[in-house]
Amino acid sequence: MEEIIIENNNNYKNNNLKQVDFIEMYNLYIKNYVKSIKLLEKYKLNDDQKKVLLKMFHDSPFLSENLGGMLEKKINKSTINDYIYKLELNQGPVYFHFVSDKNIKSINKIVKYYFFVVFLRLNYNNIYNKLQFTENVFINIVTMDVPKKILVPVSIDDINSASTIIYDQFYGGPIYIWREDELEKVLIHEALHSMHYDMGIIRQTLSNEIKLIDEKISGEQGVNLNEAYTELCASFLRSLFELGKTKIDKKEAKKKVRKIMEKELEHSIKNSGFLLGKYGLKSLGDCATGEYRQNASAFSYITIKSGLLWTIMNKCKSREEKHTDRVKCLEEFLGLGFWGSIGNDFQKLVFNILTDDYFIKLVDKNIKIKPGRPENLFFTVF
Image (cartoon, rainbow, N blue to C red):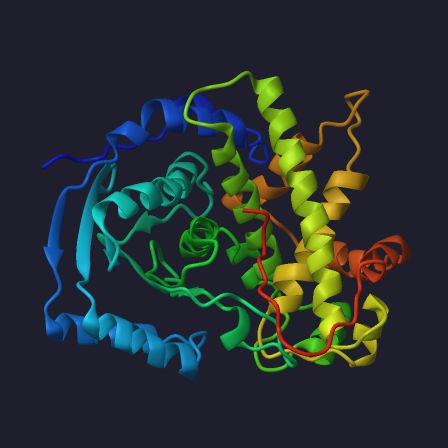
């Protein structure tokens, strides 16, 4: 039985907590660690263990009754295996359980995305609140081919793919994924939750301005600003895997990532228009009047995420450089999550975006009112 060993890299401990070089870390990860990710042990769940697994899925507030019924049928008729990977950390051994109906070939393709987030967390750990992982971490993946869609009001049955239990004092809260679409990006997104990436936002008290937005659109789930930030980071981290399996020139890598994120922005803006069009709205500004209501966090996943990416790709300016490096801007902004140092200015940024006339016009140009049958929805270009 082999084990994966990921140690903290002292070369990346520095005094500037905001400086996170995601591309360089990706190159290090691909070069030094991906090949060492090996299966430690595998065993088949019995019927009683499958019942426990199903109950844990059903306990999620984000799994709809409809999808829960479908998932129950799949778990009951499928072979579910626990694929175990081991990390030797300073705290001692940590066992990562990928519980799934997928075969080992599929699991081996998936785990590299998850362990990249682990790798980042180990190297960029908030020195003021450095936590340990739980000894056993569970990533439960039993997926169904049910595309995301938009109905009115948008619900968890329409768009939610997964959920995570966040432990207050530990990294590695269990993850549950039940929708196949965009699996790699969803896994990264949930791993970020599990490792406290957005905890700095979750613990914030809502400003008066954001409270008003929350009251207007939130419905059952709330506006959940943290979801926009986490979704943006997940999309960015997923884009890095398009760089390939070998180290490439940093300048060329940045060019490729920037092109991908520009496509991501275009796609996200179109999704924002698509979302509002389904509600029959003519302008993003109409959301402030209470004409948009949701029972899932679609507004945060789609529109606020779009606004954050648009702001960085179009408004970020460098004081030191003649030509602003947009990818560096993204790295600096998203790197705040790993240090837990994102402040209440984040809420001001979101409010400014949602009231920015240019951004409103940009979204409005993409609104096409399309009543009738729902269309498949993809959150990202991947």
